[in-house]
Image 1 (tube, rainbow, N blue to C red):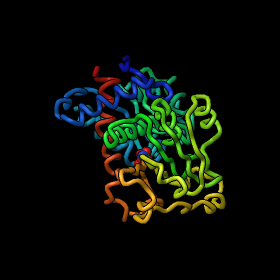
Image 2: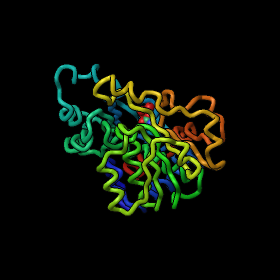
Image 3: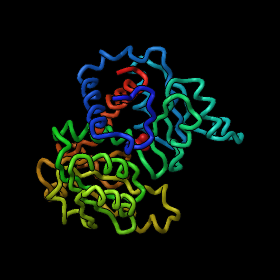
Image 4: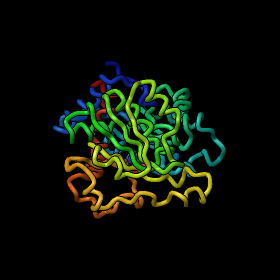
Length: 306
Ligand code: CP
């Protein structure tokens, strides 16, 4: 499998075998992280965040440090020469000369793919607008495999903002390799966009669309909850109509299989009550912490010769 110097732009660029290989490498790293502590000694990762982030940026940066490498970058583009009018293209071309790999988040769909044209080093999409978030998907797959022991044949519910939620757009594609049944649970205005539905229909994936969670919750092996993404709405009235549409608390567990697991890419707002955090079904903090071995695996595969 060829991972060396490869860009990670879209989950659609990865085969089923490659997805399983990444999970496998991440599991090996998690089992004995110290074995990899010098793998990227002397290498530099540029962390370019044009949009806010906690988990993705900090877990990538921690992963690079855990591999013995160094990190440069910014999380406030206003403090760079972009504020003087420099283009993203020129910014990438310059930073490309200072590092060995670039991790980039940007509010515009397709921006990371465009940036890759200006870079000779590999570039990793850390989220491009409402489009994709492929490295979150590797984290999600790893977490599902870790907790369920398989990715095959699961009933998976996606709840919340399926329109703007880029993690959903990437994860549904990746899981389509594993004969799932999907349950898309959202307010009518936040349904999964038609282009993803068509993609699933052409792959023969079975799915249900529903507004009310408890109508389907007993079927689910995994419930993937998402935040309603206020920042993506064009006006505050549209957001106000769906704000707080779903609010899960411990009473929800009565409507679910005992072994069902709840994931969430986080951050959350009010869709999961903190009272649910200690339930054995809730694995979203474990999921966030899995960002370290998974992103160590990605960096090790791309620039570390794993
Ligand atoms: N899951 C995720 O992308 O979180 P951040 O926005 O905090 O990086």
